[in-house]
Image 1: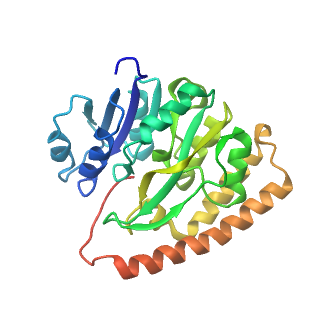
Image 2: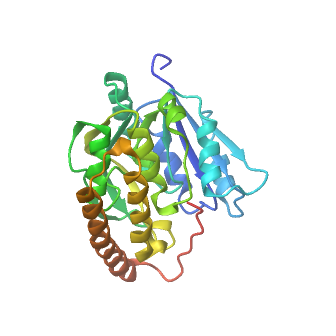
Image 3: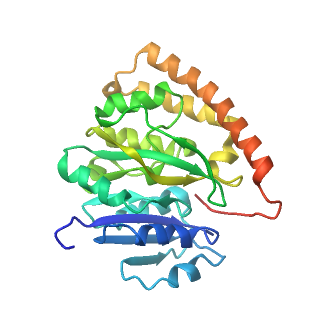
Length: 284
């Protein structure tokens, strides 16, 4: 085990009692043992901490914030505490499948790339599959082109924070999470990682991202387009990304179309499948 690179799995929590047990189970059941699991709890007042403490695995490191930090600062605190060669950020309700870390780490060991991701399942609050989303490509992809693939589709096809495994030394060069544009916090982070290297897409479904009516992705609704447009403008101002007028127009047009499709999908699905007594106050 010691010959394998240490991997830091970072899980910021806030009132995550509904899902944190399954999330931690999915991490601890990986076919990769040389991990540290860093959990930064941002003042939960439910049973989140009690559930975390019910695990006796020595790889878990729970740190409780003395005062509430908020999403951005809590995420970054977890990352700053990471001591591994490679890092993965996870929402406290996400799931990674048993070979996720071993397969992603093998890519970073074998290829000089900055980030590795995969296809994903979208699940609801009960763990039921809603649909599967695949990245439009596989294998090694130039970092700038990978970001453009995402922008051209008007959505984050690279994936949420749980999607990626990245190098700690690249993180130090790229910078940490920036929450000024909350809906784009993940793609903004990936864009800076990909300025420092290529993306590798594993042609498998290796994780599940959970959506509930209370999650940030569902709450923002049609305001997503404005956040996306703001991000496109930011990227376009960076000469490194070489964004043409065509790139900008296509990105914003697709963002409008994807916003309609996404919100109608969530609206129809959750009206049919959400129990009236379900409640969640997850900060993430």
